[in-house]
Length: 299
Image (cartoon, rainbow, N blue to C red; front, top):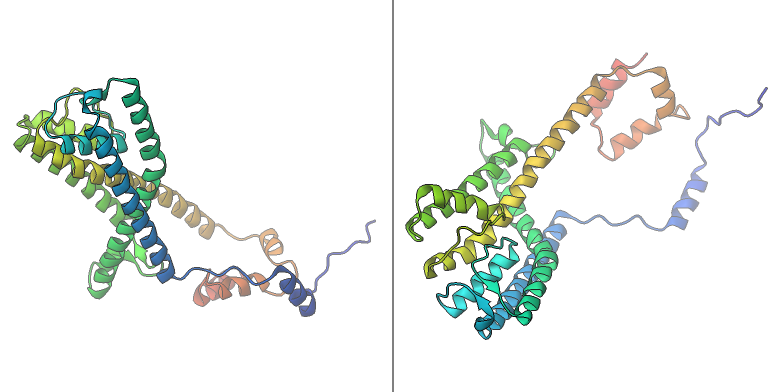
């Protein structure tokens, strides 16, 4: 017969204080203002590197136009258009390198744009969308009626359904604006304009259709950069909605599940209510909910 017994007493406070002193102070959490400032720093870095990338690409292409094939409109516009198409990894194929030097330069542009700059630009898009979310939440809190449908007061953020609506709206807006400009400026039919717009914002770019006029390439230099990043972020919102739905289903199952004696023993080893105290202290559970759970599972 075993003579080992489980201890039913809490550790001495002196021992806990000594352990806390050895571990050092807890990590300092960033305040929302500090988080916003850090995001603003990422936005400034992304803008600076983007301008540097476009400037170097424009200069390199302008002085080496004979190393590239394709229809020419204006040296600066064509070089800017080429850099944006490369940065967004679309690859229409209307402007392609011919010589080994031009191919090596294109490889450098692709690696830099696809790796480092895309990460920073994604952070910049997150910063802008977070600001937009904060403005919408603040406006919804000031109103009445359907504001509960827009934002979650407990979590202090927009509801997932609102994010999904904004995501779908951004996709439709980007495709619609691109289709309209292609129809009016590039003189394409509605089907071809819609087709090229969808192929562009999704970064597919088969290469059978592309921008050929000077105004069209100027528009594409701005529209492609904004729309590809915005649409990518929108699809992330859709994925977040599916994950959130699964988490809510699991949480609902856990809350509706009857607690067993084994669960109580596993959660509170020393019978002091320490688990409930920690949950209340860190705000993981509200006091009324704690009383409700205690009353429900008081047996």
